[in-house]
Length: 237
Image (cartoon, rainbow, N blue to C red; front, side, top):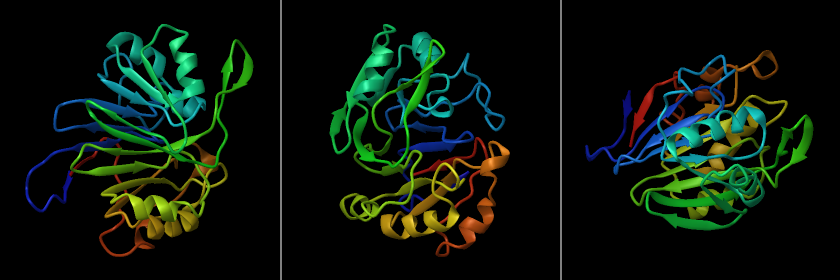
């Protein structure tokens, strides 16, 4: 466990669970899952049949990000936050949803979510047919005390400078797998633009095409900025 809260008051616990799946426990004990790809994820340490969630945030409509969203939400009653098109898809299944779009923000009782751009596709197979569900996104989540940026799947794009300028980011999750997203070299540039206190690589080593060395990525960042998390490891903010 890594603790860099210098005042000693723990307000948020965050863990990574393979690919882009991140779990956040807020200071009010709200459990938030981002991109809960559990079933079929060889790196995941979670059980889709028992994991609890109050909120599920889905960055885009690819199977390795939607994952077990519907099944978990049906069992737990979790609120699904996603782009409006994807939220509508989940709402048609009788699930509780909140739709957003790029550039928008909303204050929930558990914190503030801003939806940021991501350069990536957003397609999901429905009844054997590919269906596009809106635009891929990243998210900035703040509980009022700390701010986390999850870039989702994305290429490097210059507006990351603005995300860093307008948000004091404590922790950023950046994809490094390459091929489908930016690679390690671009993620190093993104980390400089974002000016996050800590940067954690995600979306790598789940399958051969996106194999990367997270330690090499961390070593390419300024000292004490990068952290290659182990699956299930907890960061306390």
